[in-house]
Image 1 (cartoon, rainbow, N blue to C red):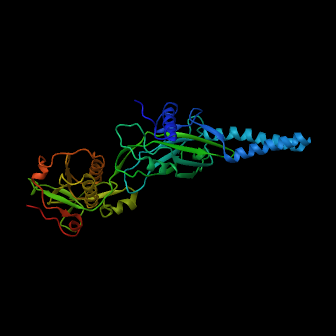
Image 2 (tube, rainbow, N blue to C red; image 1 turned 180 degrees about the vertical axis):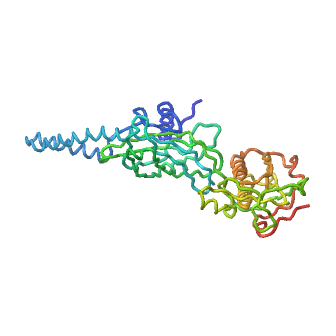
Image 3 (cartoon, rainbow, N blue to C red; image 1 turned 180 degrees about the horizontal axis):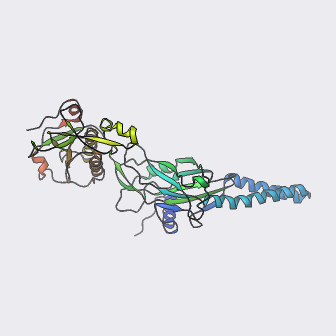
Length: 388
């Protein structure tokens, strides 16, 4: 049986989104055309039309030719502005870059590049773009989580303005980047919805707008919150012969090699001489005979949101220190490693951990070897001691 919509506005919005999916399909790159552009007079434009009609009625009533000419002039301005506003907005082409992950208690962003239009590569769109979210998260996607209606309404009411710089013939290869803020108040993997982009250049008499879906997904990390976690040391079988890369430059270590710098690595590992010489960011790798790896875990009977927040905070801290660690919680098992990519992998796995993924604590192999919970705050001040 078909469900009755919660409100009339939500029903019409749902119908609009279904119609837009057919008329303006999702794509990482959009070149505006006749099918994707909508135009109507703005509030100022309707006032201008009413003024023109009043002038025409006064001119015909009093047989005043000057007033009639003024009304005809206003009408011609309206018609010319109609075509020019549409023509200017039809030169807009946007390309979305993959958004970076962020924590649910912070704001992220999606970057849109203003590129040259395939039909008018030598002409650019001018004016001020107004961008707001029609729906932050795409609805009807079974592979992604959804957020509440109140959060959607709060995001859709925010509008962001960007002044287009345009370009000349010699600068047509330069791209302008628009950074649109993004706020999702819960963890998980989300498919971003449509955003409304509008422009009223040149006189503000007409407003052109479009609803674009850039077919992008983003992973929202959980909110980091300090809590007691279980730290289990894993000894290496060939500890005397193993070599690992560490970031603590105060210990007895030898220089090993240079490698490309990854975002998130400590700045004390950057080779600033190479940066100043050729601008290439490289990081130093050091060797040590110590190769301790740890498993960060929580008991299975702990609330999942509390455990995910505590493990997220621990992963952030251990990634900044470039420690070798892994994760183990309920059905989540990640082998020990280090680096920014490993930290992103762990944070993404924690963010996408389903709340309903419960397992029997008595049957869990982790609960058989539960160690005394260790506070992360104390671990940062003291050296890690292997638990027997």
